[in-house]
Image (cartoon, rainbow, N blue to C red; front, side, top):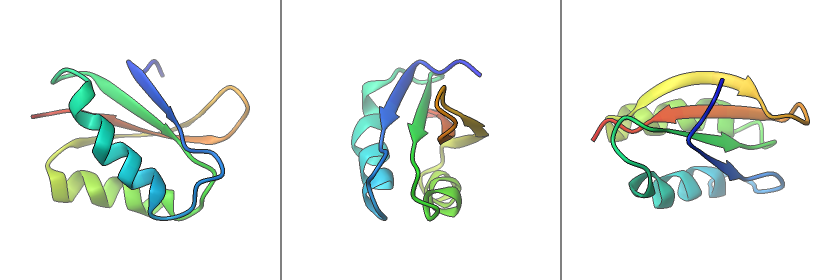
Amino acid sequence: MDVDVELDCRGMRCPLPVIRLANNIGDVPVGSTLGVVADDPAARPDVPAWCRMREQEYVGEDTAADGTPRYVVRRLR
């Protein structure tokens, strides 16, 4: 799936991928998507949980070109 902005969080451990997401969500326009590429297994539950707490849409998971998991978020507000 296409994303408007992609964050490379490879090698970062919890909670750094979610912190990067929180720090960068304001840089994309409302309605745009942000992909968090993270190889930390904790990102799989953390990104959707962050979306619920911050009222953003968790679009789903796919993979980056190298096969690393990518978690896609749509900015709602």
